[in-house]
Length: 168
Ligand SMILES: Nc1ncnc2c1ncn2[C@@H]1O[C@H](COP(=O)(O)OP(=O)(O)OP(=O)(O)O)[C@@H](O)[C@H]1O
Ligand SMILES: [Mg+2]
Image (cartoon, rainbow, N blue to C red; front, top):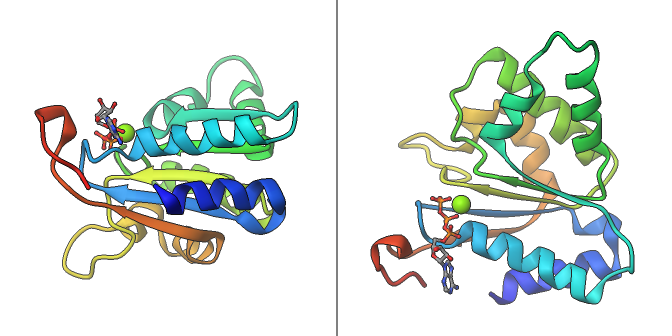
């Protein structure tokens, strides 16, 4: 998609101002496919060496649960905060709690403050006054940071490609 390619190119020319790419839409519309497309484009046109982490948000919350190993979850969160490129796939799928909100806040706040390029996909619309939206999931403080950080918002439309639908 041209918007996705443009965002990837933006990160290559000016990493600090590229901010976030948010792909939102119903299941099977190709969000994850597009997100990896952006990463491939960065890999092809980008620096010889760069770090990226792609993580499913439900897995991320799972891996950040406090464990017996002292500091392991904190170290993992720091790794996700600091990595050069982060793909946070399927934000808004896990069940919310104060704890998930705090983790999301710490992660997004860090990446927002340090202008680190972040790709987010979500089944939830960025904004929907009539139903659940991303703000409901992440909370107002994260939503406010996302609103400023996301420079490219791509609503993915169409039917579920996994069911043979034709997505746009
Ligand atoms: N542009 C495309 N061309 C060909 N196949 C595609 C394209 N986009 C997506 N697909 C295929 O459609 C299926 C669904 O795509 P994808 O997993 O990216 O959807 P999604 O929006 O991330 O879904 P979910 O919300 O369930 O995570 C996958 O099998 C993927 O390979
Ligand atoms: Mg997906």
